[in-house]
Image 1: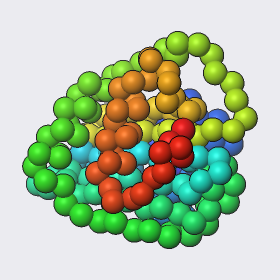
Image 2: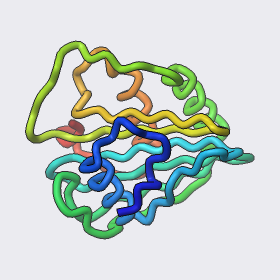
Image 3: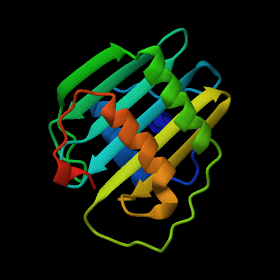
Image 4: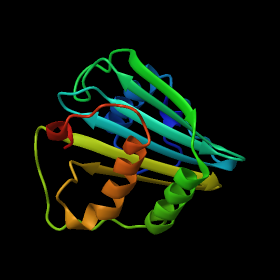
Length: 171
């Protein structure tokens, strides 16, 4: 598997690196390279029993959103691209994205409690600008008060898409 999808992210186990990369490759997602002159934001949502979703925004003069929903399940085989959406964000949407990113910059996750579970979802958020790369990998952070900013960013990225997510399938 291509490990370049996660530059400088030493906290990932080889299993996670392979699992996450497999889904990104199926979504035809290009790796985030360091020393970029743009801003990059990427949310990879791997729900155990539902379609994997990858939302990426690349900002230079404009912020371009690329969303991909796969046909598989996040806890299993990724499948193939089922839904594809590409569009330019409005100035208002881009400003809100950057405002949330400012809140999450250098955020350190300290969970309210240790959560251990079998089924759930991985909420993987990455952002890069210049030579700065940050990434967070949380398991089903929905009700975790300490994860509010992470959840806000990820849900905002999802809301920028036209993807239909059933209310009970956000976990």
